[in-house]
Image (cartoon, rainbow, N blue to C red; front, side, top):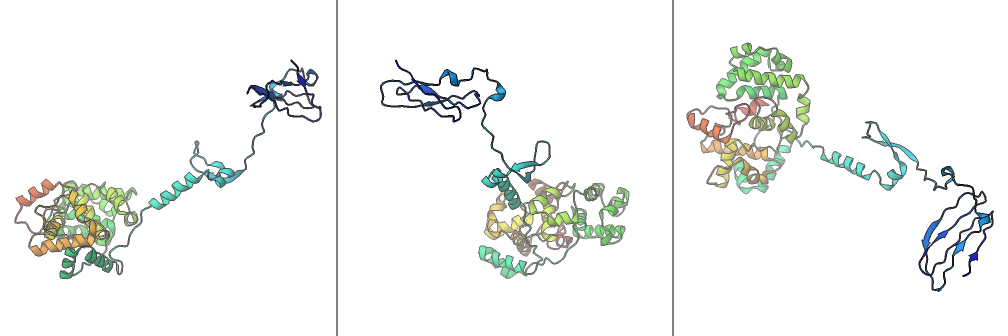
Length: 378
């Protein structure tokens, strides 16, 4: 058997391409002038020849000096240019540099996409109904979307949303009016305002300065005194403020206000409609609105709160105005529009509690009326 021996010139390293007809793995040997160790790369080849030819290197061209790890050939790393742009969220809380390759090739696309989604998810505050022309837009929409409601719109005068009180004052008034007849609540509210030095003086510091005994002297119960102090405390600590309340979207506002003792879902809905003039609020737990929907659509039973969303879907995004007409509709039928809706215990009551109180007080017709009473909250 013959060996083919090929000698490399010392100054010109050469590559030897092995020929292996039987698909055997052979080496590709590299030799340099400095006699540094060479690297063997295995490459399978195939040919039609019947004999195997093994290519080697002469012993004179191979350095016998033992190799060291420091002299092992290595593949040079690609130098990546670092951009000054940084992304937040490093493990140590500091910003980390982002390679420019990633910026150009889309390495931070996910970060950009998340930022865009966060921006898109920011709540958008719609125009209040007190803005010029907004109520006309609402009436045209409701007339077009619901023919049955259109008949009521043509029958009754349009609502007015032109009054405004600071949110703190409106919320304090809402607490004072709970569970009371309208005349009694108005009397207590008048004395409360006088105790604070006028409506302009109804501020968190002034309310916190009033002791429970002072409030009891003007007819405010101990429980309601605690509610007023809790509201003022949340303002004092910065959890709530007039500016933040005006700027919140409906969902966030509902969550934040129901954290206040004595303010439940019904109170928040009334506050959003008649004080902030929000256009798309549906008080699903209000007896008057539910009764109006029953009359409007000829339902055999009073719709449950869970059914109200579906029944009034066509009113969006002006369900506040639709609710206002439901109160007017029930009032025209001769029933008190919100007789039981103001029965608030710790800010909220169940449907059963409302019905029980309505049965126990059938002759008490001067409870807070969303049309005549709560409308004055703002």
